[in-house]
Length: 267
Image: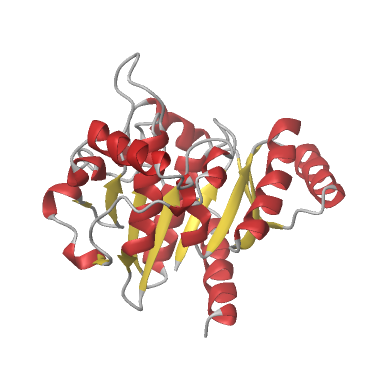
């Protein structure tokens, strides 16, 4: 099962991915996390790892090489979602080269690549690598892949969700975040993936909880869980520490629901 985690920048996608990885591990699943956000670098320490692995971009010759391959295919009239960048046709998670995977207690981490300097060019090669990796990645029957998507919705234009089973939107208490969740739901359905629902995050009061539920109902986006604002999580992010597990078991309930919904669709 491959679960994509989407949302606006700052909504808490990476934090939720770290929490969900722990919950899936506790449910007995093996977990592979793909960090496909080209700007945020915090995921490895939220997962309790000492450092990030080499980026997958290096497996295919680096960013310039991918750019050249994409330009060649564009010149032939190929659309980006239809391009094939990776030479191999399948890659079991157990055969990812050690340099490109970091092993932690809760999961394995792989990273698409990051933007490191100005004038480096667009992030299109990262999107292409993410799409191709998810296409060829083979999971074992008891394994789950969690994908920390780039902020916003640009990844839908690159066809990444075509290789994802379920998409979840993380929603913070803001109107912009609510509206984006509706777009994520619509784009997910049109991509052929399943929309797993929205997770309300960083909710700090009963008033916020009630208002957010009402607004999500108005835009017809199903809510599958609510994570309250947690000062210890905020402190961990500030100090580059592992993300502490949520204390009330809400993320475990979200994980159980996602896994059950998937098994219902794909017995």
